[in-house]
Length: 189
Image 1: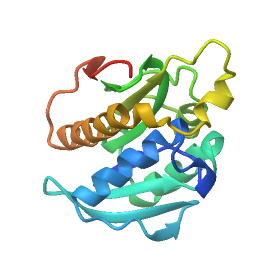
Image 2: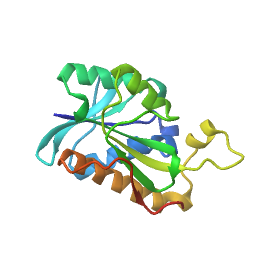
Image 3: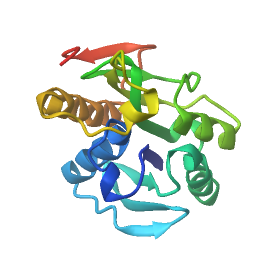
Image 4: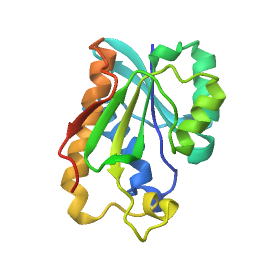
């Protein structure tokens, strides 16, 4: 069994923000595989289904970003899911907008949601798909930027990145090699 986690913040006001890239990508993956994310448990919203012949749980933590790990660890402990069967997808301001980066493991960088996941698991040896939304414009505060609505001129670029992120998750589940730091996508918008 696989656990695929999209990081983001609950609430309508955050739905189309850069910080919800994980939620958006998970939604595309769920739609593609006809998985309803409509059950509440483990401090999150989840759905079960099959991707590439593998049983999967798709999870959106409802704890707000900085406490995401609390939801993730509850599901992992309940189903006894090993770290290498956890995939986390999230926004990353350190890579160019519209680019994705797939890693087999690594640190949280500047991302508080990933810091929470790593802290709660006590490990960082799990695959992740990072959706680029950077760089932060010069006169913007980091928090204000990631919580801002994705501008219209970036919609096409970001939609392509979300679709490529969903495809990257499928590839990880299919057992295709995870390069250490692959960049894909169209770069900046």
